[in-house]
Image 1 (cartoon, rainbow, N blue to C red):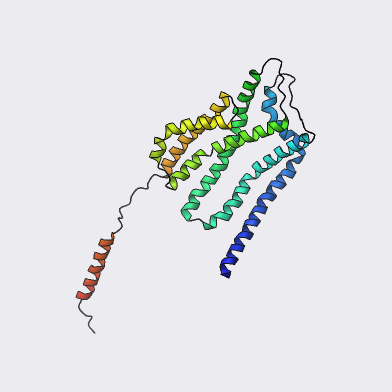
Image 2 (tube, rainbow, N blue to C red):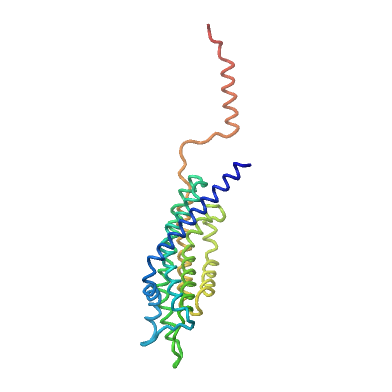
Length: 271
C-alpha cells in the first residue's frame, strides 16, 4: 500500500513541477512584453479602428479599463507565445504512461492542434474581423457614431478567437474519433449533410448576428471536417498484409500433436 501511495505522491509532485514551469514561462514572457502592452492592444484593435469612419475612436467607460484591458491582452499574447512550452510540459507528464503507438500518434496531433488553433485565430484576425467590422459600420444608421468600449471589444475578440480556434480543431477530433473506433470514415461521409447544417447553426450561435461572420465560421468548419475525413482515411488505412499468416488454435493444437507423435516414435538414443 505504501508503494502505491508513494507512486501517487510522486505523480502529484511531478504534476506540480510541470504546472509551475508552464506558469513561470507565461509570467516571464508577460514581464518581457509588459513595456509594449499599449502597442499590443493597438495591434489587436487595428481591424476595428481601420473600419471606423474618419475621426472614429474607441472609448473606455470605466476608470480602470485603460490599464487592465491592455494587461489582459498582453497576458493572452504571453500565453500564446508560451503555448508550445505549456503543451510540452503536459505531454512530458502524460507520455510515460502511453504505449509506443499512442506516442507515435500523439506527437503529431499535439503539434497539429497548436498550429490549427493559432491558424484559426489568425483567420479571424486577418479575414473575419475586417469583413465584419466594415459590414457593421456600413449598416450603421445615419447620425449614429460607432464608439465601442475597449472592454466590450476585448470580450468580443476573445470570443471570436476561441470560436475559430476551437473550430479549427475539427480535423483533430475527427481523426481521434476514427482511431478510437467511435465512428468509421464511411459513417462520417454519410452524415456530411447534417454536419453542414450543424456548421451553420454553430456559426449562428457563436458569431454576431450578421450573415458575413456566420458564413466565415461555418464554411471553414465544413472544409475542416472534409479535411479531417481525408486525414482519418489515410491514418486508418490498413497496412498491407505480409505473407505470414498466424496459425489458428486448431492448427496449433494439430502441430503440437504432430511434434509429440514424432518424439514418441523416435528410437531411443544408443549409448
